[in-house]
Length: 446
Image (cartoon, rainbow, N blue to C red; front, side):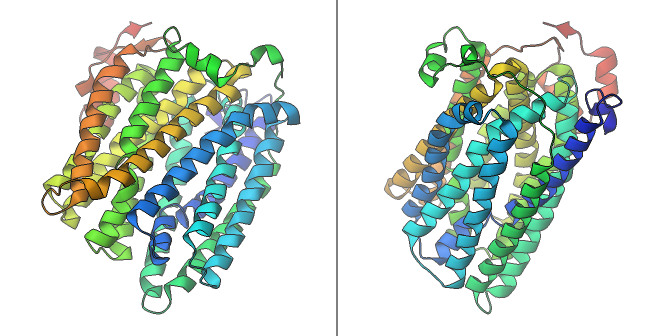
C-alpha cells in the first residue's frame, strides 16, 4: 500500500509511521475483540437488568461526549496530538487491569462496573480526535477511501478472529467458572492495549499550527446548522445514531436472555456482521473515492433503517446470520463514508475540534437513544410474544424517517461522479463491475 502514502519516496518517516499505526491497530483490535462484545454479557453475569444495561450504554456515550468537549483544548495545551492520544490510551489500558481484578474477585457491583466501562470508553473517546487528525494528515485526500478501506478490512478480519476466539473460550468456561473466563479475556485485552500503546509512541507527528483564531465553541458550531453543510451533516448523523441506539444496545440482551442463545451462537451472529463490515470496506472505499461520500451515506442509511425489521420476520439463527451479512454491507459503507466526509469537509486547522464536536453530538444522541430504549422496552405491548420486538419496530420507523428526509440537505464537498443508487449498490456487491460503471454510467458532478 506504499502507493497510497503521501510522498512515499521523500518522507520515509510517514511510511514508517503508517506501519507503526497499522501494528497499533492490530493489537488494538485484539483488545476490542476481547472486550467490546462481551461487556454486556459480563454485566448480565453480574445480574444486571435490561434498564441497567441501558444505563451502562448511555453512561458510556454521555461521558464520551462530555470529555470530548475539552479534547481540542487539551491538544492545544499539550501542543501535540501524539501526547494526547498516547497518554489517554495508556490510561485506558490501566482500566483493563481493574476489570480483570473485578472478574477475578467476583465483585458483583453494577455501579463499579458501569464506572469502569464508562472510564474505558471515555479515555478512548478523548484520544480519537487527535489520532484521527494526525492520520488524516498522513494520507492524501484522494486516497483516503481506498487506504482506510484497506486498513480497516485487514484489521477488521483480525477483530473477527479475536471476537470468535473469545466466544469459544467463554462457551467452554461456562461449564466451569465463567468469571475466570472473563479474567483471561480482560487480562489479555490489557496486554494487547499496552502493546498498541507502545506502537503509538513510535509514530511521527507532522507539524500542525495551533492558533486561537481557529477555535470556536460547540454553541458557535450549533448556531451554524442552517448555513453550514458540515453542521447539517453532523445533525443528520447524530439523529440517525439516536434512532439506531433506541434498539441496538438490546440485541445482546434479546439474544442471551429472551432467545437463550449460547455464547457461541451469540458470538457467531455478532462476528458475521463484523466480518462483512471489514470485508466490504475496501469496495465501499474505492466507490466512495469516485462517487463521493454523500452518495454512499444516502444509500447505506436507508439500508440501516430497515435492519431491525428482519428480527420481526424470524428469530431463526440461520436467518439472523443472513441478516447480519446485510447489516455488515450497510454499516461498512456508512461508517467509512461518514469518517471520510469529516476529513474532506474540514480544514486541517479545525479538524481536531470538528471531529470532537462530531463525536460529542453523536455520543449524546447514542446516550439518549439507549436511555429511552431502556425506559420504553418494559412499557410496550409485545409483538409475537416479545416486547423487545416492538422496540425494534419503533426504532426502524424512526430510522426510515431520518434517513429519508435529513440526508437531502447535505451536499458533497468535492467533485465526484454521478451514479444511481441501485447501480452503486449492484457495483459494490459485485453484480455490476466498477470498471463498467467507470466507462459508461458516471459523469463529473460538483
